[in-house]
Image (cartoon, rainbow over all chains, first blue to last red; front, side, top):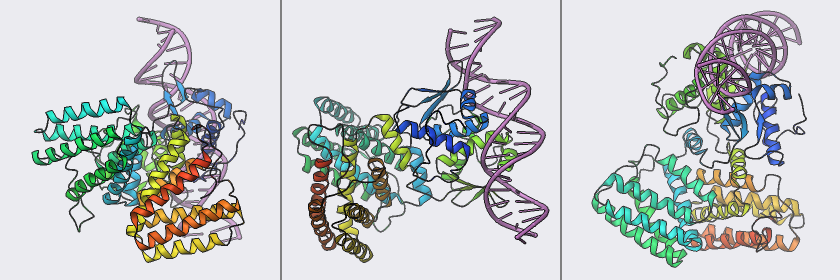
Length: 252
Length: 252
DNA sequence: GAAAATTTGTTCGTATGTATC
DNA sequence: CGATACATACGAACAAATTTT
């Protein structure tokens, strides 16, 4: 195998069947990425070129490319100007795969919802500290939108979810945003259930309070209110003494 | 293509090049998983069998299996009793892939460390609420181990990291543990730097206080102490006015 | 321990669909 | 529209690994 692309060093994370030629190619590309020899947008060649460079068959290259593609490391395009390029980062890439791992691992929805509270409450705290004027405009706008659909359970739920996401985005931490999106994807893969008018009104009031606290920079109160808000949602979604099943989210 | 395994419905998460035959197979297996038709340990057949069932070539099956394997959905073994089986869940599976996505997305170490504080502080809070006697024994044992290597920077750092992990595990939330491990892998892929004696002694004192608070169920104080603890570490690792670079962790 | 059976890993050659110019 | 370049897909075959006999 050609080692000109980079010096082949076995990865530290011990994949299964690491000895296969395809996995060696994966490791080489990965190492080149961390060594700074490759970056987003860089063309690493067509299947034929790679097969020639590594002195392996095209099928073997395909195996490696399929792995790299699934890991989100490369993007593959067909056509005359196609080929394999280093991908731009996409932090939402593993949302679905993470959901599958949670399912396979038998992690309960209760644990995931706990995690959701962790992310969202601290995201709220950070939002109160780091929010920009633009963030406040966005949040205010979403509040107005929600107020118009208090009688439409489906639309209100959607508006509420947008508001929650906007809060996390106001934290200014992309890692937090990515984790939030992943967990939401895990819990509500099929979309949320509807909320009754009374519940919607209460949620709207809480959202208004959250907005004020974030605007005024009251980090700790905002965090506590968010915890209470999410806990109440969980209490409804997960009837006590039954941490196994769920009827789905009520709102937000 | 054979549709007997399950009714093919395109996934809601819009993959690129979803029309490819290989990705259709991936989607089918994934759907069967969420529909409960497949579970961990189930044998879904050899490459030859799958090629026959789906009425595609073996290479196409290989493409699909490579994707499923990278997503951690299946495990593949060679040999007489080999074949492709639905994998057991492994929440650490995406640690490396997540690190790559952070790198490709240009997420700063500062953001990741913020995220780390989020996870760890709330993990501490939950630990104080949910810790079992076994957890306390484990934490106490790790404290003793650390006390013996106060003069050995490398070993003390390692012991400190074990202590931090044990706290998160005491939270009883596997999703939290998985996220903690992932982020630690992102930040310290090559192992941590050394800590001086004075710093080690201070860290040890903080760890003792954390243990006491967790033991006594003092959730809120434990959380605040952990935030302060991690913030001080970050202050050293990330000199102020310079959120870009890092000299690596000092301890824990 | 050795041989046989099974399965994945890998190769070559060839044909087709698709995107660009 | 045609030419070009690429990924996608097919079939047959051999090598390597692993379990069973």
